[in-house]
Image 1 (spheres, one colour):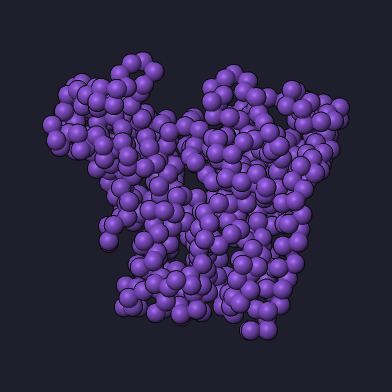
Image 2 (cartoon, rainbow, N blue to C red):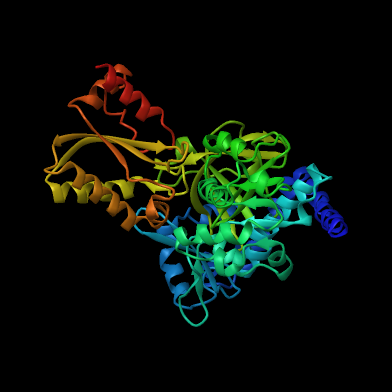
Length: 505
């Protein structure tokens, strides 16, 4: 196995030269991809609508094609879901990545072309290994197997030729044979959608494997780790997998989990590698050891634009090209991809931490949300849940805010709400249950995390005294129409501040 590990490491490091090229010539690489994308789609329905044949420059493209979101592309995607082809992209679209949370839908379906699989998602997966091998030339990762926490949904068939699942399920289903050989557990377990049974089965199937790397969202990795330790009676994961050397993570902020991982994997040599991979594309990889910045990957079939957050509410906000961005400013990402997403605003916000090469950090979302565990609860989800809870309990809400409760000891995470009522519910506990159940109905990712309280417990809700939020805003000198209570936050800053004020009143 050591010889095989050396061969794989050598192959992975060959890619570093190409990565260094786009780091050195970012504008040339982006221009080349722009023309490739436009030329490829000129005979699609979308390309004909906007006359792609006559578009010669990114500036013409920006002038002609409006910025899109899921709702504006939804009519085209729905036709593709029904089997129509050559709508947004010329090659046949047979796969869709299902993810939760537009303002109007329980879930959204992102088209995944063969090109985006090969040139974006799989290329990103190989690149993160290339970067790791380059940074750790003495690694022994390929002497064992990679434990991959798969999708939370089974792959489902839409029609004779179309399938969907969450992104990780789509990727696992399309992995090349060599990658499947180095992955554990097998696909039948990795794609199980009952997470309670799945965690048990994954633990049972992997405890006797030589696991050298783990890939997954921190939330579920901790749940699995606790199952493994419970099953084996061991104190930490290195007692189970002594050759474990790499953890690949993404999707949620890792900071709140870092201390727990140090306890689960007590080794200063453990390598943590963050990636920025979404249903829409693979965008960034942490390329430097001991730095949380991520290299913006510029040769994955994605053309990037960036909207300054101060302009986000404008009807037709101006988007900047890569050469126009500045350091440490918040931008909303706009992408055009080889999966048929055109000037698509994905909803994430980033800052550039370096312009040579282009490195980024994720700063949040274009709207308030809670995504501490991969649940991505947005304002619309919250409003629907609260409206239904009020209707069924006779309550009226004056104001509210909510934030995450992070994992602690053996307890699951959760959401903590502070709600001030104008009219109290006739049954407070019923109000909380209806709110919780409605959130599960309107947000499939929240529902998955709430299953059996495995990752998210029932919400903790405080019934706030009258004038709580008025007094809080007044204390902050933020009374007035332009200042509003933050409804949802992906941190505890507001919740802790208000609770402390209530406690000291």
